[in-house]
Amino acid sequence: GNAFNFSERLSVLNPGGAPASVRFTLLRQPGPSVVRDASVIAGGRADLIVNDQFNDTSEVPAVIESNGPIIAERFMNFGSDLSSGPGVQQPSRVWYFAEGSTEADHKTYLLLFNPQSAKVSASITYMQNDGTTSRQTIEVPPQQRAVVTVGDALPGKRFGAQVVASAPIVAERTMIFGPGSTSNTGGFHTAPGMPTLSRQWYFAEGTTQQPFTMSMLVLNPNAQASNVTVTFLTDSGTSLVRKYAIPPATRLEIPVNEVVPELGIATTVTADRPVAVERALYWNGDRDGTAGPGALAPAYTWRFADGRTVDTFQEYLLFSNPTANQARVTVDFILANGTRATQTVLMAKGSRYTMAVHQLYPGQVAISATVRSTQPIVAERSLYAGAPTGADTKGGATALGIPEE
Image (cartoon, rainbow, N blue to C red):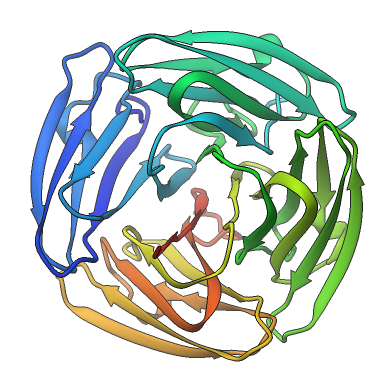
């Protein structure tokens, strides 16, 4: 979190049938911490504008707790780009990142938050595209955050990373890039690490249409090679398959525009060993971008706490149906004034679908969504501050929904 250089908002959605008592703890550095409580009605949502509490620090880890299950997201606006997505549900001793670069004007930061009452040691292993590895060790004070400037240890490289800590922590990655990347004229994106590896990863969002450049990043941290199959799904239900072999402790970078040019696509990645996978999208001459991990599995229900269609904001919901059956997808929205609305679509087997929420419900300063399907699908949300191809574009972000367990 950052309330000095960014506009920051925390949003919660209560999908339960009873009111939820929610506590926001903002661990500002330096302290003191700020605690705010809210009651969220059944099926309702609530926001906390961090800048309304204080705006004098760039280090604001946050913990959101509730007496019932909730969905929590963070929205951050840099002026020229934005980030939006859910928090992690619990700390972990191990985190993986498949995207990372310190080349040219790219800057990568790893943010390690220690919620423990004692200091934690974290070992970071960087794995490059050519199989070269390097390591560094960081100590994180109790209930504080450490910021790792990767370029200091690994300048001029593209890489993935593995973080192994002595006790459970939270790890996120922020990348700043593009012309003017030292100020608010460049692009940025933030994403949590992946606490687990998997043999399967699913992505609903993806496009190689102008002005987008798309890459799939696959990190193989194993001591053995991994064989990977990548399947691209289109709106019409057709698919394209590509196979790759990844050496041990190596990152594979797939330039998707060269494989599937000028198409909107969903992606499924299957490997014979557990790997970590992210999708990166850059546009506007690499001034804007978004990157993050996929889903471990399709689900029947997905939830999004945040969203907006006010002013120039454009919001899309992206669905991928990787099954062999037609899916009926119903989306229940909570609009800014608390009223409800519903949309239903039919998806062919092995296809993707794009729902333009801003065309359906324009002018919403906040909008939540619950996606339900008759077949297990994958759902993501893309949010743009102005059309990506327009002169007024001010970035965008893509976030995976929270599946109902």
